Length: 204
Image (cartoon, rainbow, N blue to C red; front, top):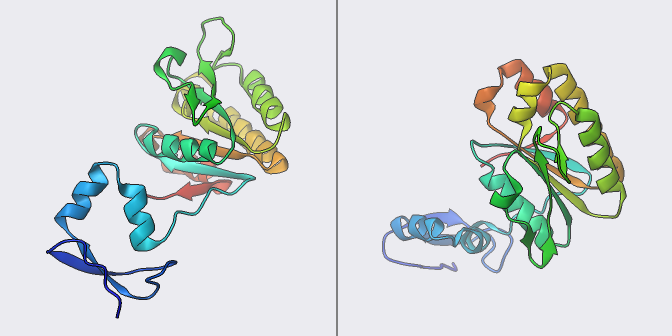
């Protein structure tokens, strides 16, 4: 039986989708966690459990998190695979990354301040049109939306649902990809269920 021993104290896992397929792999307990914390997670997960599945075009994904960290990681990987990026955020444009993997990221700031690529959070029609035009402008668009809580404070929930339904439809028609990052603590269970209904939930 093939065995990959990384270090002394270890835990056996079954390896999939690779040269050790079906074999027991010795995984170190403490060093593994340490390497994950040091940013080697993609390499280790690929080695031990198989490669990550890419996000599918034409799909909308929901990421439940307090800060848009996992959604941003997926967004960056989409850019690395050639996606045209659009980032809709409550964060000021000066505080977000505007380029990745040699590609410029278009940043839309949700704000009542007037300016280019600033969208008033009350004006969901304007935001819908902007997203619709972006995904229709070319293939393989990737959209990250992390300001849904801010939109909630400025609009009734039924308007938010209609907005998301419209965006989901545009994403499906144009074979784009949407990543919606939200903090589930800010929604009641019924509201969250309505949002989840038309989206794929990305688990940890």
